[in-house]
Length: 510
Image (cartoon, rainbow, N blue to C red; front, side, top):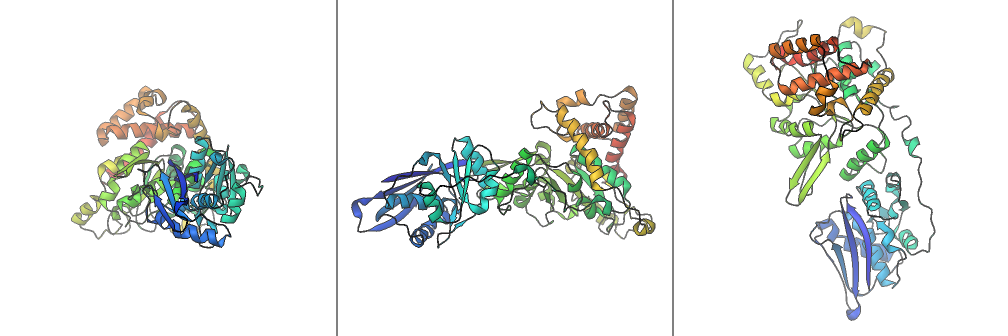
């Protein structure tokens, strides 16, 4: 007897057909073997499957049981195959056909007692199953809410192997899980820190608003204790709420990486890795490549605090992803591309002691120490950061003052309106939603300058020796400044403010 069940268990990227075949010629013997390039977790599933079947009061056939995971040249990993293998073996043992088996996609890990445990990548599996025309998806109940977000496929959550068997055999009639997707997006900023908590730093808050409005990368430089980390943690509070497509894409990445815990992700990610992170941890990788921190920050914020403390080689791997908004990882097992359209926010001190250029505190660093410290950050990487802003020490009167700054909600409204203008502008442009994503070919279309603005920008380019990349990014930031004021054309004060955001690295000789 041969039973085939479909399992899209490889992060939804590739589908796998589980074939369970029993040779009844040798019924006095029993053996089980799994073929099709399984990893250790898949090979060990035989013990989990047999124990779960026995403890669920189900039966399997004697003889030689062969489980074939097709296609045979694609490596299979993880415990997602436990449930379809167990159902296939049960169908063979009880000699019962599964009705509508070609409509099912089944994933789940089994405990020894027959309990069904959650697995990674369920939303990606649901999307892949829908693409392949499957109409029914059986998942662990802990993953059901995540999978039910995908329209066009009926999702059933199960808690045990016995419940799954009754469902696929037709003995149990259950209704597919339905969720109110709109309710998931309510109050997504409720628990986030508010920008009004930051005392003073009005120029920095302005730069933060501009960066959020155009999804521009931001660099903050200043002495220790001025609030750089505090400000960065409040960036998500002024970003626009995610729409359904963004939420599904973000959830898929976090689900594949195992960081989701069964919940649908509706808030924008904020990732702040430690400076000891490796290249693979930041960019992604592994034997079977997985997403790194830059991809986990997709549609959100990647914050790198104390930037010079990161290994220079680790930082250099960010150059191409920041430009292309995706990262391609090639290994012997294959090539995987992960999206990484995030807002990069970095913070650093001007020198090892932190007080170089401070009018009130004396810098204790030697010129050699300062030069060595700054060489840890390459010019090409800094050139990819659109906005550079200085974060000075806050005066005592401002710290003790009772007045609070503008709340995040008010800033977010202006950011949302600017993003709406950009979304309409780039509606027909592929992979572009914000000014930061504006293709080079459209800069001359959407960033037209009058004579006065063009002359000022030409003077700034010559005096400050900006690169061609800096020129493009100055115009993109100026376009964002105009969008915040709802101006159709870029004006001279937009160019002046945009140039100011690029002149800081020259002032501090970075």
